[in-house]
Image (cartoon, rainbow, N blue to C red):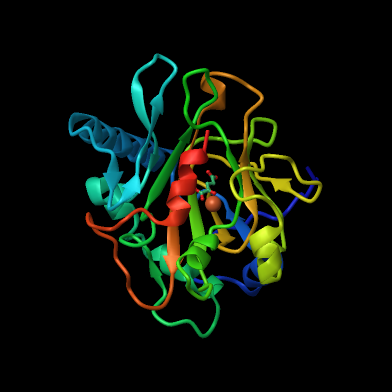
Length: 272
Ligand SMILES: O=C(O)CCC(=O)C(=O)O
Ligand SMILES: [Fe+2]
């Protein structure tokens, strides 16, 4: 892992030239304290409510996207990857209405049509819940870009952002998000073949790690290579919860209960 003591920003009503330039160069950006610790606690409570509901109805999929089930430290059944979570929780749905999200749209580029928060598209509001224990089914994620989904879909790669809202503190000595800055500007060949999608977990000499606190917001370009590193620690200390919502452009393509899992979503079964 490369040391990169990158600047952290505060999100205001509109993006500054410095923020736009940083994102353009590196393909990611980190904003401190987007929401308060109290709001984070409400969101976690909201996710527990969704989890209860899904357990009660034995749910396997949402809009064709498989739910990743696993086990917590005490052996109880938990959701380790939620999709479309905001459609099941007023708290999460409200969160996506935050007017500050719109101020991030310029990261999608200048000439895009219909930029929006993808609450009903792709996988909607995702919540990843990692924990490193024997019974956990989700403790890391192999290298990938989020734009591969477009390639699988036989489409031109559209501008896309993944906006993360972090719910736990995550430091580089405890696993967490790793990314290779600048790879959003790579060739299509590099986007497709730089690494083996989801199967490669190896550290990269160029990768950097993020240190985030609960309530921080990060944005990465859909074309950026990233992974989630396994925590070397076991148990409660390794718990990491983070939400992602896609920011997309172009034609509105909501998914519904009849939608089929897409090829890349089958890849998700490989996650451990
Ligand atoms: O959990 C993270 O920080 C990244 C997750 C991710 O890359 C994804 O869900 O596509
Ligand atoms: Fe990703």
